[in-house]
Amino acid sequence: MSQFIDDVDQRTQMVGQNRMDLLLFHLGGEQAFGINVFKIREVIPKPQLRHLPGSSPVVCGVANIRGRTVSVIDLAMSIGFAAQPVDEDQDAKVIVTEFNRSVQGFWVSAVDRIVNVNWETVKPPPRGTERESYLVAVTEVDGRLVEIIDVERVFAQVNQVPLDVSEEIQQESETLPHERRILVVDDSMVARKQIERVISELGFRTESRSDGRAALDYLEELAAAGSLYSTIEMVIADIEMPRMDGYTLTRRIRENGKLKDLKVILHSSLSGQFNVDMVTRAGADDFLAKFSSDELGSRVLKYVRQS
Image (cartoon, rainbow, N blue to C red; front, side):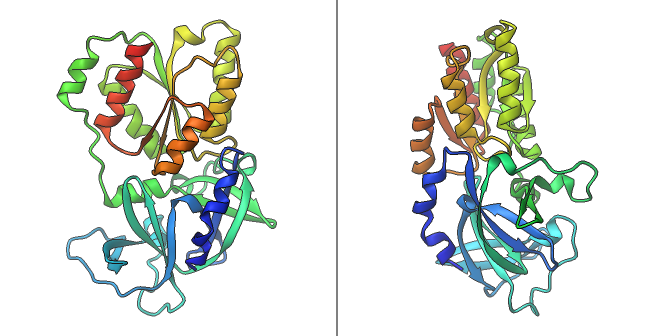
């Protein structure tokens, strides 16, 4: 399965065009699930696992993967399904991912294929569904529903991220004006709450939207009313989002004469030089990998001072 990731450089051509590649997989049933290929390092057969006493119940164990000790998470169990048969299922795979400054594996029953989808066809999860809280979006591929899992929420179950901002940064914030709000745009509820808490500790209020399209509509409404720059301090946006990704949102902001002077920070679980380069191409002011409370706080204060 590692050949899925070997040609990732070819896939980068679609970034900024509101498209993504989605790896489809299964969790012991017919329902198809998906994860963005850019979060994936490789897909490997079932490795030998070593159990760690005291670890989270959703952690199957740890494995040595290319010389690195990696926690392997039972993805089915983490979203409320029955635990997968780790020992008996010989066809199972581990999706090795890298995001939020960490490498981890997700145990799945089977991997299907990679499909290319337009973010405009990716919708928020239907309300009232049993797994709603663990989904960031749904889409349709070949007439069947694909559920896109909020892996950042799954990751948060086993790795608690420190959310408190240092006292030094909080004190620095006290010298700055706090009249305007910061617009937070992220499809992950966990990520939104993390960002909102940091901003709150800095003394700012937030306005939140779950995708780029909704954020752009809101900004255009404020601009039409003549209240944009008296209301919004800056925009902090995720890159991967339904309907409109962060790159496209940034580009649309820069193309609109009434919005173009807004400060935009792209804040993503996807790290690396590629994203730094794409931020420049899209016209964002900065890129920050998730998640460091002090780094986010420092960047916010930097752009508040500039404005």
